[in-house]
Image 1 (tube, rainbow, N blue to C red):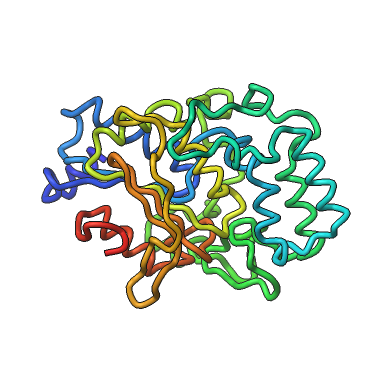
Image 2: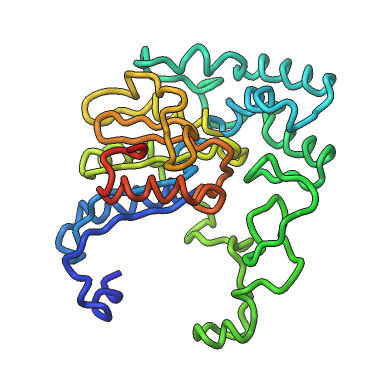
Length: 319
């Protein structure tokens, strides 16, 4: 970023907003935290962050606990057998997932929310998320964990993604030799939106604490605006899991939201109600109906409106 500002020096002193989706739930808060802790390193004024369908906590919280309830919510979409649903319900009961959301996600919270079994590790026989994924693919081979409503035909995507598997109907745009030549990318490299190779230093894994349990609360307190967005049709990271994370997080002197986010409170211009929008103590949480994991891709008008709010061009995401 410092090198970028040396090339484009006219941007020095401008406002900065750091945004991203998915695993950005880790790196965006950590980047923002670093900027705040090193105020002289970057000639920009950080104002806020946006993280969409973000990884904020452990997989057991954002995938496993809400997975069976999610399938029940969308039973007609998953179309799984009653025998398998009974197996899921029994497993959820044995693993401490059943009724968790109803018991612990209260407004305001009644205390810290426990982990099933007291550990972030997923116990043997309790990985219901992967089991559901496999079962869904058996019923619908085009099942897309990023947007559960997808069926055949699989839509072509110029980037070959998103999907439960690569979409390779034609050459991927950024992997075309003419495109690589224009952008001065190595011609012998292979481009993909998500790498199958390790991207972390050291032992190959990210050893950082989940951001909601470490740096995110402090970043919220320093930001002018912090926005968390979640598509309700996302199965990779489930919205109810994000609500669990928020209700377990303490920022600006209190834990979680104290008022229940109201249904139909996210109003999109020209469309009407398209989810929920709620703000307390500097944190705004928006759920977007019908959208999958990539909210700006699946619901661009809603995303644009939320972005206007982040930039201070709207008093709320809905107005």
